[in-house]
Image (cartoon, rainbow, N blue to C red; front, side, top):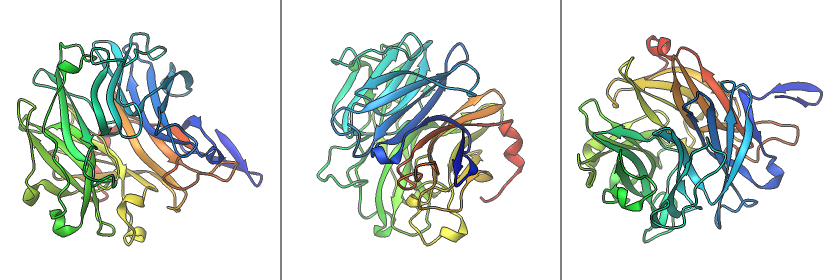
Amino acid sequence: MTLQINGQPLKVPGTVVNHILASTNTYIGSPSVCILPNGDYAASHDHFGKGSSEHERAVTAIFRSADKGRSWKKISEINGQFWSNLFVHKNDLYIMGTWKHHGNLIIRRSTDGGFTWTEPMGNRTGLLREGEYHTAPMPMVLHNGRIWRAVENAKSFTTAWGIRYGATVFSAPLESDLLDAASWASTNSLSYDSAYLDGNFRGWLEGNAVVTPEGKIVNILRVAITEPGRDMAAIVKISDDGMKASFDPSEGFIDFVGGARKFSIRYDEKSRRYWTICNMVTEKFREMNSGSVRNTLVIKSSPDLKQWSVHKILLQHPDVRKHGFQYIDWQFDGRDIIYLSRTAYDDEYGGANNYHDANYLTFHRIKNYRRLINLTLQR
């Protein structure tokens, strides 16, 4: 999409999947992308902000591309879906998240590639847990005969962001009915602890279920911290049966570029490395809170989940106030990586409300990503 500002052309990075004007007070959230069995791409995003219904019954839009992401068409809209990820299981398309901001945990299935969806009316049809839950479009992991996903229990003694979130992992047998609540077991919920990080800890959220090199499931979470410019993640251990979560603060926190914003981790068998796309704080913005710096997007990888190499800057804008490339969801696609960004950027109508309140959903491709392994910007 080519826009004009003061008569000059402006190119929004990537392919625009959707664009919502900031004046609507409705913003683009929770990008998710997956590859359908026939090779088409499916994408989704929810709507948040004062102009949306996120606190009553949230809305998620579904898009599809039949030409490898060069063009997109909106094919459906789900009334009652928020903070959700798309995934394919046994050739059917699923979407899993909550039904509103801090709502019930739900899952839906589509047998026609996203045009129509089941309705989670009860515990046999997709209503997995009633209560207050938080999540984002996080990866599904297949391991030890089960499918795994990290979620946060948001029912707490407080309604404060970050502090209210308890780290939890859900799992179900691969052959089970994923719409049946009885199929899903969960760990205990690990609550906020004000003593962590010498009192600088402000919560963990948006966890990744990941299989370690030793074959164990862990939950790797985004960490909110008060130290300016500091990026960290937390690694929570999960028992083999998926019933117990445990955390040792003396070894569980790691320095992690991008750790103060949402990130997704996936493993590539061919390169034998874990990969993620995340935000990096450059030297110019070291005095800012890391969670609010989203103007630089990088790709990085690790052989062991602890030592990470930043390989390349993918997207960058010099302004942090009204520009952001964030909440990246991505997939391996042969030799390439495809990804979606919740993008705050200029348009003909004054641009985004701010870096956080994105006005675009954009699609991007990283060609031959494994060649980046020998490039290192930062460790």
